[in-house]
Length: 381
Ligand SMILES: *Cc1c(COP(=O)(O)O)cnc(C)c1O
Ligand SMILES: [Zn+2]
Image (cartoon, rainbow, N blue to C red; front, side, top):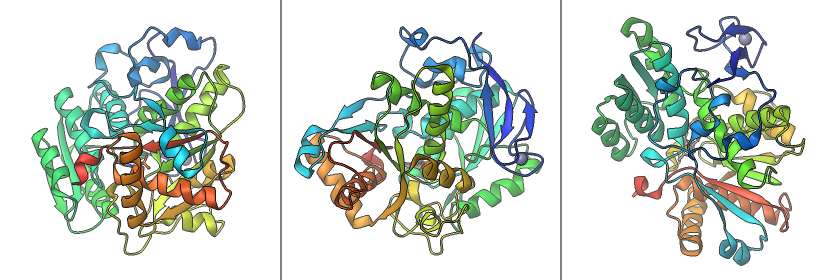
């Protein structure tokens, strides 16, 4: 069978829904929905001979017919040892999962490949979404590949490259005087009337499935073990939540043991709803006032699935911390000069945070630490 997709389950109230139902959020409580799979009798070596894209894990993805897969070759990114950078700053087992080589220049490709494929399978012909930058380009590219209409809403002060990219892929872009949550409200207000399928992250069940594949790749590349710590630049938190889901799925499949990395959610000082809620011991975040940072992927003042980010970070024994934009810039230079990677500011953010966490002894110098560089520096010139 191409997919082991079983049904949808609400992450908040536990309600379940049939897998062929067109859904956004839980009809009972408005929570985020997760796909669940039949997780038994699947050999991890079954994937060995397959191409290194997110579809390598197709049994654990929600698309049921192979013909519906919309792919541009996303995923299968390198996990690189960062020995020179590590040695200069006191880390002995430092790694960078470099997502910059994905189609459209960021790991948003993973999520949108999954969401657009499943949208095609369910018969949607128009998608719409709010974006702080990279999600729009990825959605537009996969919609183009699928022959779908794509409507992108982005803050008017988003760097022009993100708008130009969407338009090049044939999407209709609306610039909004506000932040990503204001854009999200505009999508929601128009979706029913216009016949758009809203693919806002975690307000549909499948982008998280594309991003969870980072967790599968991490385990496979480390010989079916997981690192001691993962540092993740957190906007909507989809990748962090998705990897945590992947770890649970892999354990249930018998592919890995119960050991988990400590998950660190990294945000910018100018937009830090998750570190704030984490420090205050809260289960949900409040909208962060005056949100600003040049790392556009981190400019999410209130994540829809904040309750999942906070739950997973706490369950892992990790933390949520901030860095400044200046620290990010310096960190990007250090990664570039030591490792030959032209990283996005979001990638710089996690490296800046790693140094701070080492100084605070929240990371150990002998620990195996994986930093996520989630995008290419070329878009931020
Ligand atoms: C969207 C984005 C993020 C945040 O990703 P989430 O999974 O939504 O938290 C981080 N970095 C870049 C480059 C992004 O585009
Ligand atoms: Zn619910």
